[in-house]
Image 1 (cartoon, rainbow, N blue to C red):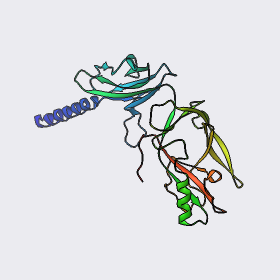
Image 2 (image 1 turned 180 degrees about the vertical axis):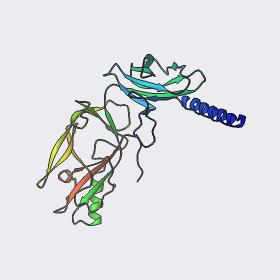
Image 3 (image 1 turned 120 degrees about the horizontal axis):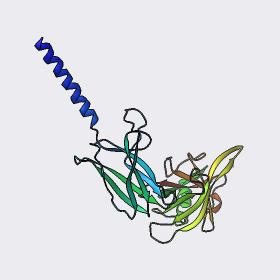
Image 4 (image 1 turned 90 degrees about the horizontal axis):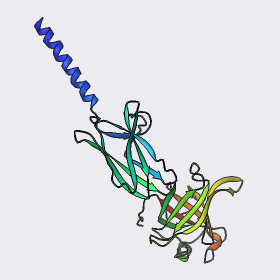
Length: 278
């Protein structure tokens, strides 16, 4: 009987130990009502947030894990502030408020020294920045290799935006990014003030098929871009990718284009600032 009692006590201690271990999690930030940890689901754990000066209330995030005795270490109060607010659903909440453009890291620590960090980026407003990382010229139709080379070389220094330059898309409606808005164009990676223009989603008729295009207007120029594979392309200098945009530049080609051929300018755009090597 004493033997059975000892076994029961040991099992009870194991359950207690397991429960205590589950009570202490690594510290995390999350959005929504409660953190989602299940593997294979869309969790809501976060390590970074983007805030905008046009939304001065900022964001409310939850904190889970640790021993619950939390304190905040602000990276730079001039860029964004963080403060505890009323707990909800048993989880401590923090309101992060934007102050000026920049990046900081906000850290929350518990009483045992464990911590979690949240990278905060503050922008003036919702925008998408696309960097020009590669470009090329493609020619379709019956054309000799020598003519392709001549056409490609004829477009050197033709386009305003160089490698390393960028487009900033500032939508009129932040919930409809691609419908249209203000376009800021940085021809290169210098700090010179950008050119200001517009971008808008437009319809493009190809034969009897209506396609979606993106029209950039700036510097007295108009660029009508399409995404995806080129029509009837015999050879391109870029592979198709998510941000590969192309425009038909046959009409502005500086040299004669063989009859029945078309010339396309392709720009590879990325949200990351780098330049691809050929």
